[in-house]
Length: 335
Image (cartoon, rainbow, N blue to C red; front, top):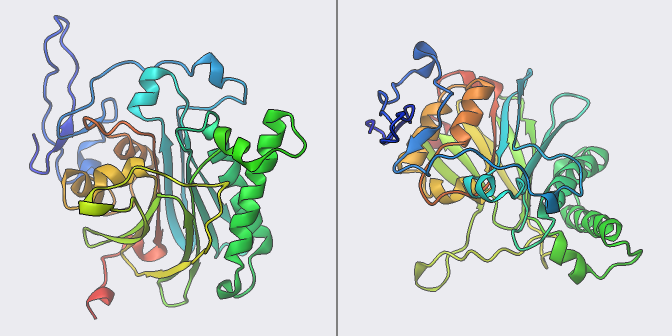
């Protein structure tokens, strides 16, 4: 076990005895070369197995890959995004029910991030997640006002819900399906962030969400919650109940935050949020280590696909830093 509680699984022995434990992860994987042939283990790992193909009952739609990965930098941002099928779905043949989409507006300054987590009780929630993130990016790209403060976020959420209902009509073969019937097959969370540079090296983010996907700012190794996440019930017990689209909340309240040089905005599903917790444990230390500089795309998805017992949900994480992400963190939050 490494000093931070995570390490790489070694190859299994031919005689079936436990895997050989390799050396703990050192502080600088770039110097050592990234060992991507085995998952990063955090604590006690999920049992190792070969993933199954997506079951036939889910193959009525287009091909759905196990994992998706994206990332790039421009004059304003460094972006990394990954969505991976969870260990449980790899084992039982269910498709990845998370998804994300990114849209860079024509001026290259405003970035749209959409992350969705299909509600597991809906039979085609993977279609819901993909439908809503793509539609969300299209709607925002087409209809964002010049001043983001003037965005009609309620109309945005209602339009996303209607996009799911129309998709449900196609699946069910009904011209005017009952939204409650659509919800049985298509239900998903949605969290969107629209980012723009403030002209001083920092970035402003306008965030809105439906459901329990969450947003954090990673600043000097600490994860500061911005919005979302699972709610605590009576006695501090965390609720696993999820209410997502096509249900529209009574009020839609955007959150505005600033990402300073050296910080990273993180948008993730509960497959990330649950093991991350408050960020003080091994999972938080692992991500803080990986994101202390812009990782390569393969390093990033490797971290998202870590192995830890009982945390077997799909995982999606998008990380965005201002261009100055490559510089040392500033002391803005201490001022």
